[in-house]
Length: 310
Image 1 (cartoon, helix red, strand yellow):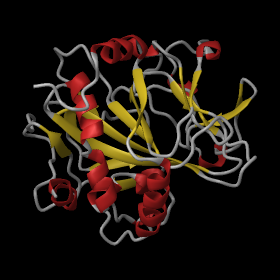
Image 2 (cartoon, rainbow, N blue to C red):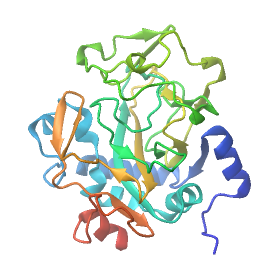
Image 3 (cartoon, helix red, strand yellow):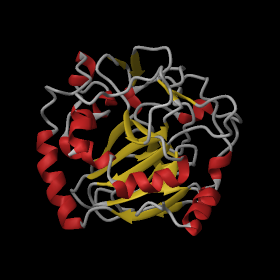
Protein backbone atom coordinates (compact mmCIF):
# COMPACT_ATOMS: atom_id res chain seq x y z
CA UNK A 1 0.00 0.00 0.00
CA UNK A 2 1.42 3.34 -1.07
CA UNK A 3 1.77 5.81 1.78
CA UNK A 4 -0.02 9.12 1.40
CA UNK A 5 3.10 11.26 1.28
CA UNK A 6 5.46 8.79 -0.39
CA UNK A 7 7.85 10.18 -2.98
CA UNK A 8 6.88 9.66 -6.60
CA UNK A 9 9.08 7.62 -8.92
CA UNK A 10 10.31 10.84 -10.48
CA UNK A 11 11.19 12.28 -7.07
CA UNK A 12 13.06 9.12 -6.06
CA UNK A 13 15.02 9.25 -9.31
CA UNK A 14 15.84 12.92 -8.75
CA UNK A 15 16.99 12.14 -5.22
CA UNK A 16 19.23 9.27 -6.30
CA UNK A 17 20.88 11.46 -8.95
CA UNK A 18 21.20 14.68 -6.98
CA UNK A 19 21.30 13.66 -3.31
CA UNK A 20 18.38 15.82 -2.25
CA UNK A 21 14.69 16.37 -2.94
CA UNK A 22 12.29 19.17 -2.06
CA UNK A 23 11.44 21.54 -0.61
CA UNK A 24 8.03 20.40 0.62
CA UNK A 25 5.52 22.38 2.65
CA UNK A 26 4.70 21.00 6.10
CA UNK A 27 3.34 24.12 7.80
CA UNK A 28 2.01 27.28 6.23
CA UNK A 29 4.21 30.32 6.98
CA UNK A 30 1.76 31.90 9.42
CA UNK A 31 1.36 28.59 11.28
CA UNK A 32 5.12 28.06 11.44
CA UNK A 33 5.72 31.58 12.69
CA UNK A 34 3.26 31.03 15.53
CA UNK A 35 4.61 27.57 16.39
CA UNK A 36 8.18 28.82 16.51
CA UNK A 37 7.27 31.90 18.54
CA UNK A 38 5.52 29.73 21.13
CA UNK A 39 8.10 26.95 21.30
CA UNK A 40 11.16 29.16 21.23
CA UNK A 41 10.10 30.34 24.68
CA UNK A 42 9.39 26.80 25.91
CA UNK A 43 12.81 25.59 24.78
CA UNK A 44 14.49 28.01 27.18
CA UNK A 45 13.42 25.59 29.92
CA UNK A 46 16.07 22.86 29.96
CA UNK A 47 14.88 21.16 33.15
CA UNK A 48 13.80 18.03 31.22
CA UNK A 49 16.47 18.13 28.51
CA UNK A 50 18.41 14.87 28.16
CA UNK A 51 21.78 16.63 28.26
CA UNK A 52 22.25 18.30 31.61
CA UNK A 53 26.04 18.34 31.75
CA UNK A 54 27.45 21.65 32.88
CA UNK A 55 29.20 22.34 29.58
CA UNK A 56 26.01 21.91 27.58
CA UNK A 57 23.78 23.88 29.92
CA UNK A 58 26.23 26.77 30.15
CA UNK A 59 26.19 27.17 26.38
CA UNK A 60 29.90 26.42 26.06
CA UNK A 61 29.12 23.76 23.48
CA UNK A 62 26.59 23.35 20.66
CA UNK A 63 25.66 19.94 22.06
CA UNK A 64 23.00 21.77 24.03
CA UNK A 65 21.19 22.13 20.69
CA UNK A 66 20.85 18.36 20.32
CA UNK A 67 17.77 16.15 20.76
CA UNK A 68 15.28 18.59 22.21
CA UNK A 69 12.57 16.44 20.59
CA UNK A 70 12.96 14.24 23.66
CA UNK A 71 11.52 16.91 25.96
CA UNK A 72 9.52 19.25 23.70
CA UNK A 73 6.05 18.24 22.51
CA UNK A 74 6.08 20.18 19.24
CA UNK A 75 9.47 18.80 18.19
CA UNK A 76 8.45 15.27 19.24
CA UNK A 77 5.42 15.44 16.96
CA UNK A 78 7.42 17.12 14.20
CA UNK A 79 9.95 14.31 13.75
CA UNK A 80 7.10 11.79 13.42
CA UNK A 81 4.97 13.74 10.96
CA UNK A 82 3.77 11.52 8.12
CA UNK A 83 4.66 14.24 5.62
CA UNK A 84 8.29 13.64 6.60
CA UNK A 85 8.35 9.96 7.55
CA UNK A 86 6.49 8.67 4.47
CA UNK A 87 8.97 10.43 2.20
CA UNK A 88 12.02 9.18 4.10
CA UNK A 89 10.52 5.66 4.02
CA UNK A 90 10.59 5.96 0.23
CA UNK A 91 14.38 6.21 0.47
CA UNK A 92 15.37 4.14 3.51
CA UNK A 93 12.60 1.57 3.83
CA UNK A 94 9.87 0.89 6.40
CA UNK A 95 11.91 0.48 9.61
CA UNK A 96 13.14 3.93 10.54
CA UNK A 97 14.62 5.69 13.55
CA UNK A 98 15.31 9.35 14.24
CA UNK A 99 18.68 9.30 15.99
CA UNK A 100 19.41 13.00 16.37
CA UNK A 101 17.94 16.46 16.03
CA UNK A 102 19.80 19.77 16.00
CA UNK A 103 19.03 23.46 15.83
CA UNK A 104 20.95 25.62 13.37
CA UNK A 105 20.51 29.32 14.16
CA UNK A 106 22.18 32.01 12.12
CA UNK A 107 22.26 35.53 13.51
CA UNK A 108 22.94 38.80 11.64
CA UNK A 109 26.62 38.89 10.69
CA UNK A 110 27.23 35.16 11.28
CA UNK A 111 29.58 33.38 8.92
CA UNK A 112 28.29 30.77 6.50
CA UNK A 113 28.69 27.09 7.29
CA UNK A 114 31.64 25.61 5.42
CA UNK A 115 31.28 22.99 2.69
CA UNK A 116 31.25 19.56 4.26
CA UNK A 117 30.05 15.97 4.12
CA UNK A 118 29.29 13.56 6.97
CA UNK A 119 29.31 9.77 6.76
CA UNK A 120 29.98 8.33 10.23
CA UNK A 121 29.91 11.69 12.10
CA UNK A 122 33.32 10.83 13.58
CA UNK A 123 34.80 14.16 12.48
CA UNK A 124 34.88 15.81 15.93
CA UNK A 125 35.64 12.96 18.32
CA UNK A 126 37.36 10.51 15.97
CA UNK A 127 34.76 7.88 16.90
CA UNK A 128 31.84 6.96 14.59
CA UNK A 129 28.39 7.93 15.82
CA UNK A 130 26.51 5.84 13.23
CA UNK A 131 27.71 2.61 11.63
CA UNK A 132 25.98 0.83 8.74
CA UNK A 133 26.44 -2.95 8.32
CA UNK A 134 29.53 -3.90 6.33
CA UNK A 135 27.49 -5.39 3.50
CA UNK A 136 25.54 -2.15 2.89
CA UNK A 137 26.57 0.13 0.06
CA UNK A 138 25.33 3.22 1.88
CA UNK A 139 26.62 5.38 4.69
CA UNK A 140 25.62 8.62 6.31
CA UNK A 141 22.16 9.69 7.32
CA UNK A 142 19.11 11.29 5.79
CA UNK A 143 18.77 14.84 7.07
CA UNK A 144 15.40 16.58 7.00
CA UNK A 145 16.13 20.30 7.35
CA UNK A 146 13.06 22.37 8.20
CA UNK A 147 12.98 26.15 7.93
CA UNK A 148 11.47 27.44 11.16
CA UNK A 149 11.96 30.96 9.78
CA UNK A 150 12.48 32.48 6.34
CA UNK A 151 15.63 31.06 4.74
CA UNK A 152 17.10 33.02 1.84
CA UNK A 153 20.48 33.97 0.43
CA UNK A 154 20.70 37.14 2.52
CA UNK A 155 20.10 35.43 5.86
CA UNK A 156 22.07 32.25 5.25
CA UNK A 157 20.05 29.54 3.48
CA UNK A 158 21.49 26.12 2.66
CA UNK A 159 23.59 25.41 -0.42
CA UNK A 160 24.03 22.04 -2.14
CA UNK A 161 26.37 20.79 -4.87
CA UNK A 162 24.07 18.27 -6.59
CA UNK A 163 25.33 14.78 -7.29
CA UNK A 164 28.26 14.89 -4.84
CA UNK A 165 26.79 12.36 -2.40
CA UNK A 166 28.27 9.27 -4.06
CA UNK A 167 31.86 9.70 -2.84
CA UNK A 168 33.51 11.24 0.20
CA UNK A 169 36.12 13.97 -0.10
CA UNK A 170 36.92 13.82 3.61
CA UNK A 171 38.52 11.21 5.87
CA UNK A 172 36.48 11.27 9.08
CA UNK A 173 38.97 9.03 10.89
CA UNK A 174 41.09 12.15 11.18
CA UNK A 175 40.12 14.37 14.08
CA UNK A 176 39.46 18.07 13.61
CA UNK A 177 40.78 20.45 16.23
CA UNK A 178 38.18 22.57 18.02
CA UNK A 179 39.12 26.25 17.98
CA UNK A 180 36.25 28.40 19.30
CA UNK A 181 38.25 31.57 18.62
CA UNK A 182 37.99 30.85 14.89
CA UNK A 183 34.21 31.36 14.81
CA UNK A 184 33.28 34.29 12.56
CA UNK A 185 36.93 34.90 11.71
CA UNK A 186 37.56 32.69 8.66
CA UNK A 187 37.32 33.68 4.98
CA UNK A 188 37.49 30.98 2.30
CA UNK A 189 37.40 31.80 -1.40
CA UNK A 190 36.36 35.32 -0.44
CA UNK A 191 33.37 34.16 1.62
CA UNK A 192 33.08 34.20 5.41
CA UNK A 193 32.79 30.49 6.21
CA UNK A 194 33.50 28.25 9.17
CA UNK A 195 32.19 25.17 10.93
CA UNK A 196 31.30 26.09 14.50
CA UNK A 197 34.94 26.24 15.59
CA UNK A 198 36.21 23.45 13.33
CA UNK A 199 37.95 23.51 9.94
CA UNK A 200 36.80 20.79 7.58
CA UNK A 201 39.91 21.24 5.45
CA UNK A 202 41.76 19.25 8.12
CA UNK A 203 39.86 16.16 6.95
CA UNK A 204 40.42 16.50 3.21
CA UNK A 205 41.70 13.36 1.52
CA UNK A 206 43.41 15.53 -1.09
CA UNK A 207 44.75 18.66 0.63
CA UNK A 208 44.71 20.57 -2.68
CA UNK A 209 41.07 19.74 -3.50
CA UNK A 210 38.42 22.46 -3.49
CA UNK A 211 34.66 22.08 -3.94
CA UNK A 212 33.33 23.28 -7.29
CA UNK A 213 31.19 26.15 -6.06
CA UNK A 214 30.20 27.04 -9.63
CA UNK A 215 27.75 24.12 -9.42
CA UNK A 216 26.29 25.16 -6.06
CA UNK A 217 22.56 25.75 -5.72
CA UNK A 218 20.89 27.84 -3.02
CA UNK A 219 17.94 26.29 -1.18
CA UNK A 220 15.56 29.19 -0.54
CA UNK A 221 12.67 28.14 1.72
CA UNK A 222 9.63 29.72 3.33
CA UNK A 223 8.89 29.15 7.02
CA UNK A 224 7.42 25.65 7.41
CA UNK A 225 9.10 24.07 4.38
CA UNK A 226 11.56 21.17 4.62
CA UNK A 227 14.13 19.59 2.35
CA UNK A 228 15.55 16.03 2.43
CA UNK A 229 19.22 15.25 1.68
CA UNK A 230 21.99 12.74 2.26
CA UNK A 231 24.52 13.90 4.81
CA UNK A 232 27.19 12.81 2.32
CA UNK A 233 26.00 15.48 -0.14
CA UNK A 234 28.34 18.46 -0.24
CA UNK A 235 26.39 21.13 1.62
CA UNK A 236 27.03 24.51 3.19
CA UNK A 237 25.18 27.73 3.94
CA UNK A 238 25.53 31.37 2.99
CA UNK A 239 26.65 33.91 5.59
CA UNK A 240 23.97 36.07 7.19
CA UNK A 241 24.48 39.39 5.42
CA UNK A 242 23.08 41.44 8.27
CA UNK A 243 20.75 43.27 5.90
CA UNK A 244 17.94 42.19 8.20
CA UNK A 245 17.92 41.86 11.98
CA UNK A 246 15.99 38.58 11.78
CA UNK A 247 17.60 35.31 12.84
CA UNK A 248 17.46 32.38 10.44
CA UNK A 249 16.56 29.15 12.22
CA UNK A 250 16.79 25.68 10.76
CA UNK A 251 15.90 22.43 12.53
CA UNK A 252 17.55 19.21 11.35
CA UNK A 253 16.14 15.76 12.13
CA UNK A 254 18.33 12.83 11.15
CA UNK A 255 17.05 9.38 10.12
CA UNK A 256 18.61 5.98 9.44
CA UNK A 257 17.19 2.46 8.98
CA UNK A 258 16.68 0.90 12.39
CA UNK A 259 19.39 -1.74 11.78
CA UNK A 260 22.10 0.94 11.69
CA UNK A 261 24.09 1.15 14.94
CA UNK A 262 23.89 4.47 16.76
CA UNK A 263 26.62 5.64 19.17
CA UNK A 264 28.32 2.22 19.22
CA UNK A 265 30.43 1.34 22.26
CA UNK A 266 30.19 4.73 23.94
CA UNK A 267 28.25 6.31 26.78
CA UNK A 268 28.77 9.94 25.84
CA UNK A 269 28.99 12.42 22.97
CA UNK A 270 32.13 14.52 22.73
CA UNK A 271 31.99 17.57 20.47
CA UNK A 272 32.58 21.33 20.44
CA UNK A 273 34.93 21.19 23.41
CA UNK A 274 32.37 19.51 25.64
CA UNK A 275 31.08 16.10 26.64
CA UNK A 276 27.51 14.96 27.43
CA UNK A 277 26.25 11.67 28.85
CA UNK A 278 23.94 9.41 26.83
CA UNK A 279 22.33 8.09 30.01
CA UNK A 280 18.91 9.56 29.16
CA UNK A 281 19.28 9.38 25.35
CA UNK A 282 17.25 7.14 23.06
CA UNK A 283 16.64 6.96 19.33
CA UNK A 284 12.97 7.22 18.37
CA UNK A 285 11.35 4.55 16.20
CA UNK A 286 9.23 6.68 13.84
CA UNK A 287 8.03 3.80 11.64
CA UNK A 288 8.24 0.00 11.60
CA UNK A 289 10.41 -1.86 14.09
CA UNK A 290 13.76 -1.56 15.84
CA UNK A 291 16.17 -4.09 14.32
CA UNK A 292 19.41 -3.40 16.20
CA UNK A 293 19.18 -4.67 19.81
CA UNK A 294 22.35 -2.82 20.85
CA UNK A 295 20.85 0.62 20.07
CA UNK A 296 19.47 2.81 22.82
CA UNK A 297 15.77 3.17 21.99
CA UNK A 298 13.38 5.58 23.66
CA UNK A 299 10.64 3.68 25.51
CA UNK A 300 6.94 4.44 25.63
CA UNK A 301 7.56 6.39 28.83
CA UNK A 302 9.79 8.80 26.97
CA UNK A 303 8.20 12.17 26.29
CA UNK A 304 8.79 11.90 22.54
CA UNK A 305 6.86 8.66 22.11
CA UNK A 306 4.01 9.77 24.35
CA UNK A 307 3.53 12.88 22.26
CA UNK A 308 4.01 11.07 18.95
CA UNK A 309 1.32 8.52 19.82
CA UNK A 310 -1.34 11.14 20.49
